[in-house]
Image 1: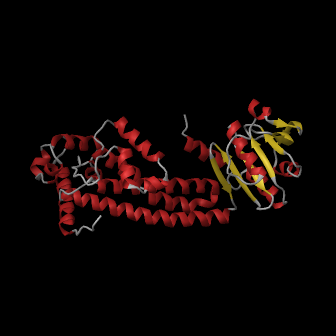
Image 2: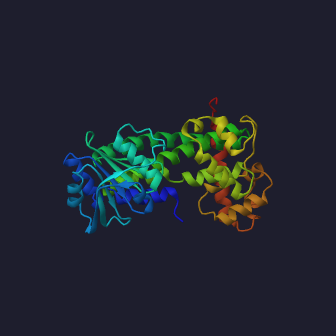
Image 3: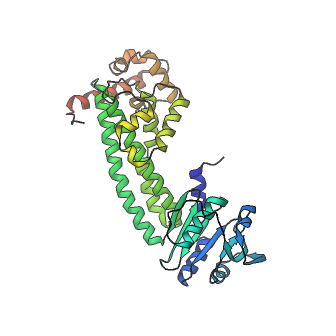
Length: 354
C-alpha cells in the first residue's frame, strides 16, 4: 500500500506543469475566471452536489474545461480525469468542517476535500492562483518561475541545515572517541537529521509540482540528502537500546512532532525515550562502522558482537581485528586506519560548549 507521502507525490505529478490538467488550470487563470474543480466522483460527491448539468461521455480537454469554468458553478471530473461529468454545480459541504480559509470558494474547496476525500482545486479569480486541497494538505500550484525561486531558497536553507548536521555528527563522534558522549550530543544529531528530512520532503514536493523544470534542483537535492537516512538509522541503532520495531516506533514518533517541538531538545529526548540529556552514554559503534567503506553490513554486525565495548573496538590491534570472522588482513588494516584517523581528529579537537 503506498504511503500518504507517496500518494501526495503521485497527485502532484498529475498536476505538474505540462500535464493536461495543469494546462486547463493555466487557461482558466489566463482568462481571468475563478473555478472549483472536484477531481473525482463517487456517491459522497453526488450527495453534496446541487444543480448544474450532467455531461454524457464528454472527454476532458483543456479548452472545454476553460469554457465550462466561465459559469459560476463547479466542475466534476471522473477519477481518471479523462471525462468531465458535470458543470455549473453548486456544492453544499458540511459547514461544521473547520477551515481557516477566508474566501468562500476556498472554504468550500477545503471542506469538499475533507468530506469526500477527493482532490479539489480552487482557482482564485482575483489572485490568479490555483490551490490544491487533499487529505489535509493545501498546496499552491504557482507559476513555474515562482516555484523554482522558492525551491532554490529552500535548497539554500537545506544546505545550511545539512552543514549543521555534519557538524553535530562530527562533534558526537569526537565525544564518543574521548569517552564524553552524552544524550544531549546524540539528540543534536537526531534533531538536525530530522530537520533535513523535513526540508528535503518539502523540496521534493516542489520538484514534483515543477515537473520537468526541476532537473537541476533534483540533482542538488539528491546530493544534500545523501546519507541522511542511514545516519539517522545508525544513530538510533547506537543509542536506542530496543528492538528494531521499537526503534521504528521512535522514528515515527519523532516524525509526528511539530517543528516547534523539534527545536526543543528535552521534547525530542522524551519522544525517543532518552533519560536526562546530560547523562553519559556509550555507543555500540554502529555509526562509526557505517562510515567504513567496503565492510559488509553482516561483517559489521559480527564486529559489534565480538568486541564487548566501543573502546575495545576502537583500540583493537590489527591482529585482534583479524580474529573477527570475516575480517582478513586487508579489512583489518582498513579498520585500523579508520580508527586511527578518528582518534587523531578527536585528540586535536577542541569542543565548543553546548
